[in-house]
Amino acid sequence: MLCYHCGAVLNDRSFCPNCGTDVSTYKKIIYTSNYYYNEGLQKAQVRDLSGAINALRQSIRFNKNNVEARNLLGLVYFEMGEAVAAISEWVISSNITTDDNLAIQYLEFIQKNQSRVESINQTIKKYNQALTYCYQGSLDLAVIQLKKVLSMNPKFVRAHQLLALLYLHDRQLTRATRELNKCRAIDVNNTTTLRYLREVELESDPETATTEPRHEDEIEQDGIIKYRNGNETIIQPAGAKNPSLDGSGLTGTILNILIGALVGAAVIGFLVLPARVQSVRRDSAEQIRVISEESDEKTSRIAQKDREIEELGEQIETLQNQLTAAGSQGPGEALDGAAAIYIEDPERIGEVAEIMAEMDPAEMETVSSDGFLSLYNALYKLARPSLLTKYYTAGMDAYNAESPDYAEAAKNLSLALRNSFSDSEEYLPILYYLSSSNYRMYVNANEAGRNELAKDLARARYYLTILSQQYPDSEYASGAEDLLDEIRALNIDLDAIDISSETGLPAGESLPAGTEAETTQGNGEAATEEGAAAEGQAAEAQPAETQAAETQPAPAETTEAAQGAAEGTAN
Image (tube, rainbow, N blue to C red; front, side, top):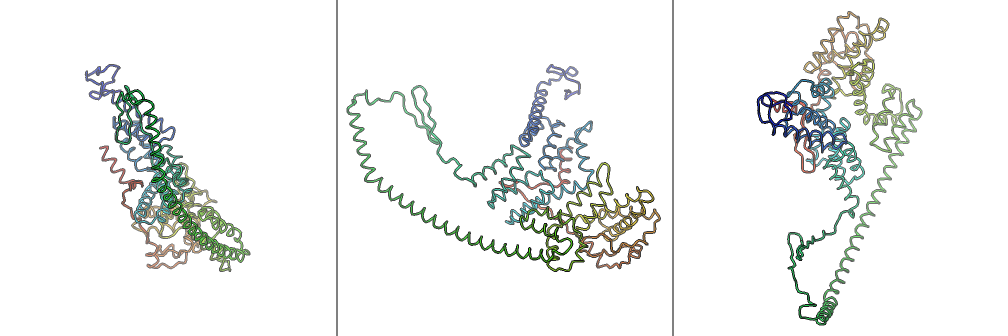
């Protein structure tokens, strides 16, 4: 431990051996901070993340320069899906000291992968949008948005809690319990999670709630008996008279008891009992009425469910007829299985997407059955977002790995491009990183391998030309120009390679227009300004600015805002 005044090493004494400053209070503060840090570390090891956060905050409150406590607090936040809070703590820690500080490594791990940063920002924006839907009363849209958030960040505790709250509001108790159990797997002692679980238990079995009044407290001290009834205290004085020893006699006491019993029985017989009988009759009549109403309501619900079952049966029969009519086609069995899975459980769209991934949209051009095509288009429309996310994530992971696998990246990004939309947020990064992967595969290959990759290099030039000319204001335009210069420097005649029918553009999209003359001449394509304008449109996400209700988590901040605030705090 170093002296706060002169920086000398302190010993066991209560003053500095160098400057003589009294450091006893300073040592207590440092020891207290370290105590809370150790407590937070122990709680984090048993996944009591909420308790760990409280302890680590106490540690930082005593010693704001406790770098180890800040780094651990950032890790706990990151484990709970609170990436912005984690980054804030790590930025403050890195500003305190740069000597052997793990916070710098944590920040580099996040910032070196732009797709990870973008994923964090999109998660926060979608979570805030879900909160907006909740305030607007659009709970179904909020549920859909929260599912997207959790697909991108499965450890986001606040998103799990909000989704469980929406399920609880809709009385989907099983789903609410499942989401809350996921929260407990991440943070075993989260107060909000435990409170929601208690509400689920009460909704499931109201009889479990304790309805008996609490017993009065009785204290006897020095012969005085005290009773507590709410906020009132009833005291029986010491030395109260004993009716059997203070002059009235035992016989008189017994007689008074008998008279009182007779009077009480008469009052009960003539006053209390008839009123009680009448009350029981009224209660019985009310219960019969309530039961009758509930029976009528249940009968109506059963009839409604029967109609729904009948309608679903007709839909299933229609779909099965379509599958039977399409059974002679090549991909019929795969489409049959995908449709059966979706009919059984619409939430298993991920499995449907796995099956649809094995089917080539080009094969559908040879299908003559209208029913088959209608079914395929309906399922593909549902599965397409899942396919895009799956292949895009796999491709970017392969591209950004410590030892990049450009062949695997190109394979997955090509599939992502085929399943993307020209106005989707992934469209431009797919074009850029797919082109970069194809170019690097070409330059790293031997002579024989380059001959096989020439067509991929031609497509790379085609995509880069789209980025450069149709999206000049995008963040990828400059990099696309640089890659085009490197491709031109290879002095390869790519115009002789015809890729007009193999551009790999999204399924159902028209060929992009407005490319360079050298590309359009080699591919035999015509460019129009209308096509370029259509391809250049992209939807911008609107960040939501909301505040949390008492039972809902607070809206998250964006990464950029958090880093700016954290740097200001540290400075």
